[in-house]
Length: 354
Image 1 (cartoon, rainbow, N blue to C red):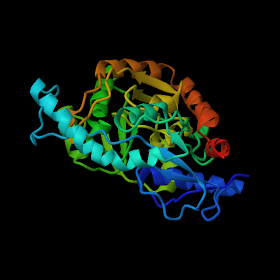
Image 2 (tube, rainbow, N blue to C red):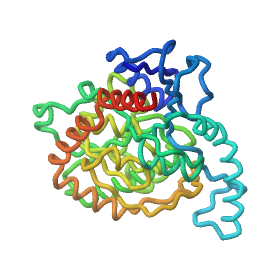
Image 3 (tube, one colour):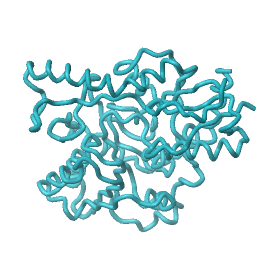
């Protein structure tokens, strides 16, 4: 059997996924750091000195840097006046080219490339480097650990519990999730309580920006912030919810969505990212016609807003068949998101590289 090696010390989402992949590779007897035939490397990290000499290089990429860099510090609503648009593109391209230099160098010398989604491949081709086709392999989870609640646990449940889960930055568009839940609250019977559960940490002032929308919409008693939760408690947290809303701008393949789908949560999302490729039929997609351009990540007033009327329409359709969508979510996880399947996909690609 081909041996794959990689480091698992990465932080955040990549580190979480690689630790899961390593556990399954070790179960299969296919993991070796010191004697690997193929070395799996994150494209935004320097090449590991632990890579064995002569091993093939499989590069895993989540895309590239596509941040908008402004000369003006004060937030200016989009679209910018055309002279500022031209300056904005020039400044952004130069700064992102420097940030993307390591990714470009790594991808150029790779023997094979793994894209988390086809959307990831589009981003790389547009912002970083025209690469070979590579292979699309989704993230995965232990579907026995991340499993739906028993039917007996759902009996007697009152109210609608909605989950949003990220490492939050303004471009995750928590402010738009709040706006959607506010509209949904008005559309449903008044005696049906709704709670929005916000799971994850805050950075770049995302919570403070969302708080302005919470106060404006009178949602203080509806939105519950839970912060970061220990990994072992996550399945129980997902099981108490009915659906997930994930509206980030250009997220390639978030682990939180994979985990939620595996727990039987259908997902409301947009076409601006890789999430539709994760959920398949297990949710509803709001269409956003957004070109691949440098995009602000720092302030909600500079981030394209979700069409809340369209989002409400899709959410109401999902709620009419919520039980059916729960079944579709679990089936999707078993068919496409099982870490055992994902590990075998990596091994099959490694064998082709050899």
